[in-house]
Every structure is written in C-alpha cells, then in structure tokens.
Length: 135
Image 1 (cartoon, rainbow, N blue to C red):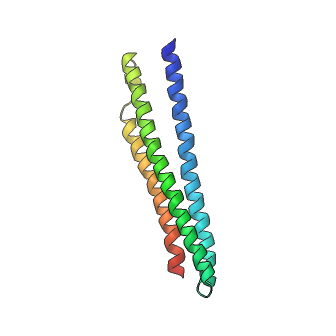
Image 2 (cartoon, helix red, strand yellow):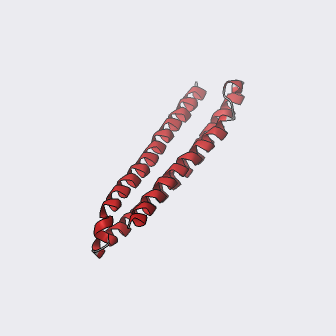
Image 3 (cartoon, rainbow, N blue to C red):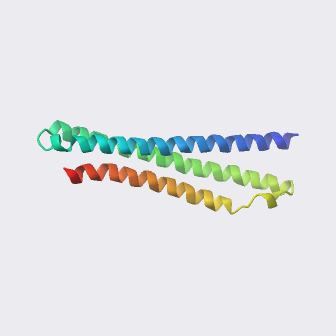
C-alpha cells in the first residue's frame, strides 16, 4: 500500500536527520575541545612570539565558522524534523491512529535541539575565552 511506503520514507528521513544532527554536534564539540587544547598550549609562546598569537586567532576564526555551520545545520534539522513529524501526525490522523503518537513530543524535540545548540555555543565560547584569559 502506498501509505506504508510514505510512512517508511518519512521514518527513514527522520533517521537520516538524527544522524546528521549527531555529526554536527559531535564535530563542533570535538573541534572546540581540540582548539581549546591547542590554543591553551600556545599561550606561553604567544606572550613572546606573535606568530603563535596569530595562530590562536586563526583557531578562533575556525571555531566561529564551524560553530555557525553546526548551529545553522541544527536549526535546519529542527525545521526538517518538525515538518516530517507534522506529516506523520497528519498521516496518523487520516488513518485514525493519532492517539498512539503524543504530539507533545514535538515540543520535546524543539527543546532538545535548543539544548544541543546551547552545548555547541558554550563549548565554543569556552574554547575561545579560556586561552586568552590564560594569556
């Protein structure tokens, strides 16, 4: 039946959406932590050699760019998930099985995305601020 194929396609898209979001979050956090370590390691030498200070600022630019990409990706993922889930809810209503899917889950997903974005922003800010405080 066609409705089953559509359902399978939507749930497959939701799975892909989740995997993509995980990649965005983990990449941003990993880069932030690596940049924090590298820039913290350059602190001592940056006091006497300006080259290290320039490298530190290059890492700051990289952190900002990667975090902006991750945040934009997460915002698009949030929009995509909302559209897909609304489609599923409509399908469930048409099939008279909507009672099996609590629509309040949409709010929970939105909160989860906001928390992911907050984690990315916080680790990004920490990876930028701490090395310069140590300097």
